[in-house]
Length: 358
Length: 255
Image: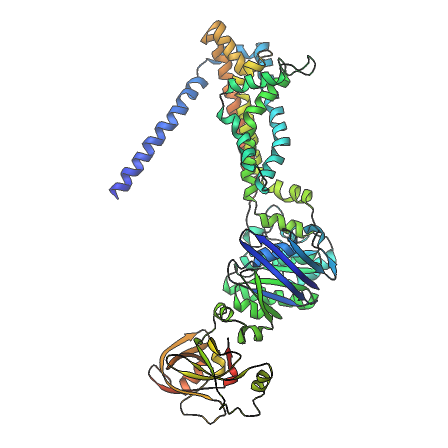
């Protein structure tokens, strides 16, 4: 288990501050953040390449803050594999430890048999990273740190490497902390996510919590959230929520009240915790798109016109102008079935409680 | 296209002039004495002793440079400390001062040392003078080598349980050996060609450059030329051999 307590490091004007963070045994915690947020600096502190100004780093309950890197039992995998070019593949993997049984197990798990006879410089980026992973795991680290480990691998091989990592991770029950700016990687790898912005850990939670309920508009923007609108909240008393809207009920108990969110071009029904200026986030997956009005208890119902249809991988993004321009994701099959195209008239429906307000 | 051709022609012409300025005197010198005279000179005990002393002292100076300059280069390449630029400047001082001045500086340092310890007038003084004027070449080449080793590679070694000493000897040093070899060759070559500081600190016993100067001043060109020719042939052959050895041992630093 990895625990951080009141960690602080000043680097000129930049201050990295992590008051508390716990990564449980066998868990993969992924730290997402924009460039310059302090992700790599944080890993350097954990690995012992830099010293914190204050705070403690606990590995399985032992404070390792003052130990040199070679005594922390924390392995690190960088963006580049950094294989030792003067050593062959086997020597690279066995650089830190020479346990032939575990070596065979790792080679098996990661599928490295074919690579052992090759030289480092002829391996592909993905293969090199797998060898680096085996090398990092060979010393049986208590914690594995990953610094954007898959971002330099070509997309074709990335999936294979990530799969191998997940396989070995679940088999060996490694506690790991990864940093990345790649959301897809974060979602795929992390049991939990954290968002690091300007040196501060601003949100932690499951991938669903972080991506679907970002804590601040800044986080929402960083995560590329669609349908984030600026406007004003006004409390309203005529808020006919149905009693089976459990989410709304929970939010009321947390101090939220019925409100109208007004922009220049539209008004939304929402739950808000303050009046005055603010933001409303409507996640595309919470919006129901239909050709006819649908009967539902949802308060937000709009009629709009499709302005744009864009294929985004295996889904289709539809932009609908309904006063506000909403982005909605549907499957290509739905697009065909509903015969949607630019200019089509459609209906949008979503609950007040599904709107995240700031 | 025409412009490109003219540009290439200009580049070639200017480069050729530069090369000729260096090459012509060297080729003239290499073939400046008939083989019979060279053979006769090679029988001369004073010449043989002088050449032996020159190469021996150059070797000892280079070895000392490797021993003392490598840690300094590593420190400069890997650490940030107050006064780092000053240290770098100090290392480069011998490059910018005239070598007789270096000789006088060394003479001042050792002038009051006792007879037994003093390097003035013996081979130790030659080694010190050679070291003084040439160690910066080794330190700078080694620094470049250490800087070329990704810091993450050393960090990886540390995270795999290897301490700083093991990391230095198992990662940094092997991966910088090409630069260390280049630096050593440069230092050695610079050492055996040194004259200005040695002639002031140690006139006797004579290294090759001092012997050539002494014979030129006392007996003229015809007496000093064969020694110069022998020195340049030996230097070129050794330099070529070392370069060949070096190219066969280039490690590949990659990701």
